[in-house]
Length: 508
Image 1 (cartoon, rainbow, N blue to C red):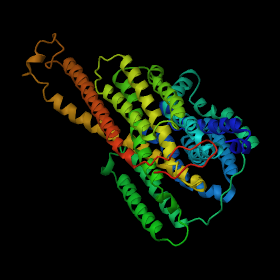
Image 2 (tube, helix red, strand yellow):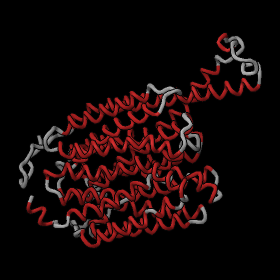
Image 3 (tube, rainbow, N blue to C red):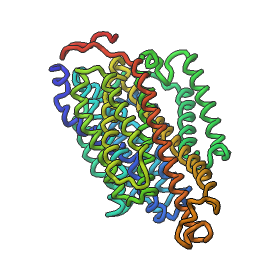
């Protein structure tokens, strides 16, 4: 422990600097969502066009993320970190200054490209500068930064948009990025693993597969899925490119773009897959709740943020607790508790009615936040517990990539189920709205099925009830997924506890 601390005398400032950069990037994955309607009017864009503000960022980040490890090997982790922070901060300023749709989409592309490396690099740095017995606390800090984005992004974005202007959603990154850059330049030591030649074919095929997949998931609902030629082409491109990448990685002589040594570590593979599942549940649920509260329950944007904020509080509390438990309690037991709490919170959401007050949403969100914290921190620690240190620069981007893809899959899943479930429930309920329904014959004059006003009111109510049924079914699906993930924890191997300053024993 003393040797590690002596090697990194400015560990506190390093942690603060890299986490500011991480939080800045994590916020931008969701902070712009609530400002889209204001951007649409200001930039004179259609509904279809304005969604490219989100799509461009997601696709660019997904494509740039896997190459992080190779860039670190070529130029060093410190230099890549510095360039990423400068590029992301400058691109944020360009987003705020944008006067046209094309300009902001181009700036968001740059944001995605430069910001992709920040999350995995911060994780790799924290793993390196902390001794093994403090990895749990380090991952708690890192996990808190990652969770701040999707949890508090909509709240901060709504507040800035309502009280200032949508441009401040991006301008707020400038002072944060400047301070993070100062700390990284001043305190972060260099780390440059042995360089290897770039597997160009592997990089291109993986990039095409990821980019096509993200486009497919992000635009599928908007383009009515396989009824659109665009979506069919994206699906075909993803499948073909992924098949080529898989065959190439398995057969290429020499280094492959995906380091095959990563595939031999069972903890890393199992942890990455569970991270994918956590991404589905976390981002899927977070995509449901704000739209439900605003469109179905009639909550204003700012109040919606206040109601969902307790999820973040629960996550922060859980991460502080788990950071102290990681070296004392079996990680699988902690993660099982997290999945159980998440499932319990989602079960609470299946009890929602149109008359439910905000208390249920606050309590459920807090419990789910606890579940996320109890799951994410030990999962991050377990995934890298047995991975060789020289593989961290390559392993952390892949871990983050699978979590991000899981989030995209989760968002698309709940949107598809919500759309189709609403249409199906609407058809079933509407079939009962007719003159022969005795329950409708006691309505006041002018409000029954025999008047245009009555029909309009009944149609609106049928739509509300159908939407509620679809939302509840989505919550049931997310709950089932959380429960089904629990048996997969048996794939995780837990290392024997080691004394401070000693190397960990071989996992069992």
